[in-house]
Image (cartoon, rainbow, N blue to C red; front, side, top):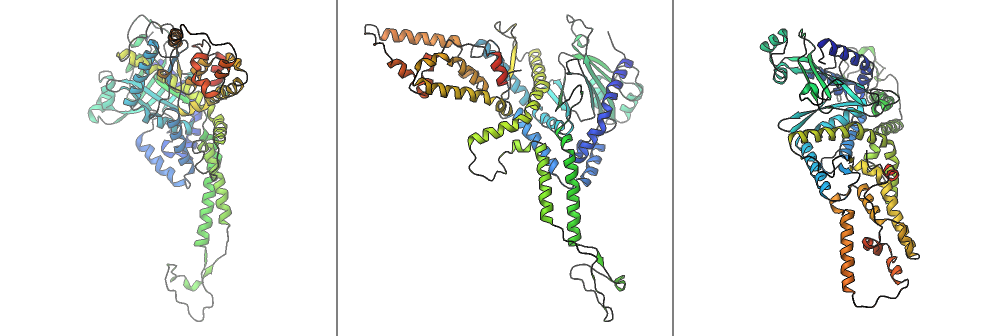
Length: 567
């Protein structure tokens, strides 16, 4: 069923009513940390108004610790979760972990996805989104198809968007307010659909900024068998906020939800998120007041209030090197009105404590763990333990980021590649089977290293026990351990053979060994072969192919949950 302008206006009004209580919170947070990001009351974020706000905001920020901490957090998340310099995701299938035809298709899709991101402005837009997320706790990015770059990404200013969630707490409806030059409006949606007033403004000044609105929501009444934008899963409506329009400018649709909506942290039924900047705001305000008082104290020491005789009222000069003449019958001299002796060292020490609290609030101690370390005897175990301790605080944020941003991003990107013909349909072995996304970024791998380390420790201990009791090797499925360690460390599947290929190689080796030993006497039974198999971890791993169990291509659900290896 087609929607009219009255319907979308009512939806927009309801969404903005729910968003309005958050606007003062966002403005206050940006005011003390990043004034140039401060949202405006109209939600449009015009460039001129943004510049004026930034200039005004620079006057009251006397200490830039919070601003630098924000920049470091955004850079750390960017390099730790979606680095353009290293792989940050893998495509897996629950039944196919090793190399094979299906694995080759998944690898081809991976390469196409990485090429799409590298050829677009994805990584630049993501860095801006991380900064917005750290300040406001809510951030949105618009992902649209592009004829030249396949995909184009736009990070929305905070205040431009209003959204709502479905019963599962997932954002599925977004309203965007935007200001565009009239020339671009006509290029994108056609001049014939514009209102009379808008067409007149277009003829007069094509570069005039015009207020537009865009609403995307699930389309519940549609015919999946029909083609066209009005039968796609998500409905899209565009209309003019000004100009006297009486109809929608555009009605279309999307196959996938085009907005990537992220929240840092939520509680209960919160629709919008809370940020580390909001939690650190008391420390940030305190820091500004302390620095202001410190500067005032220094000014009073260097340039104190002066006690000046009335005779110098018209001819006193405090310029360095100036000469002030005093009459002989004028006993009073020039001097400070009062003396203060502030303990500037103690004040600076206390200010540094507050600065450190602000940096910790932005997780700078995680990304610069050993920058300020004075000790030189830091052990590898201490590095691991301290890193895991700090990741506990960032772990929920990483998991939410993967669920709310990266999963929808990859799903929509794959849909774009498929529709454009850049990738082929899945091979028969994958049809009907779900493809899982494994995240192998630096932060994602750091979270699952505990599981990999546990398997390594188990292998070491079993190797020691096997030197005494070789039969204990039968207790461990070493083939499966290698598969799961490869997944936990993000190793490419190309270096791990499939179970069927391993079985074939073992059969060939066994047949070749049988032919070479034909006609010779069998070795005497005894513990010699068992002792050799348990001669140490190195020999055990070297001969793993002949000692492991049958292996399996699937990860047990319990171990998968412990490693955090999939979504």
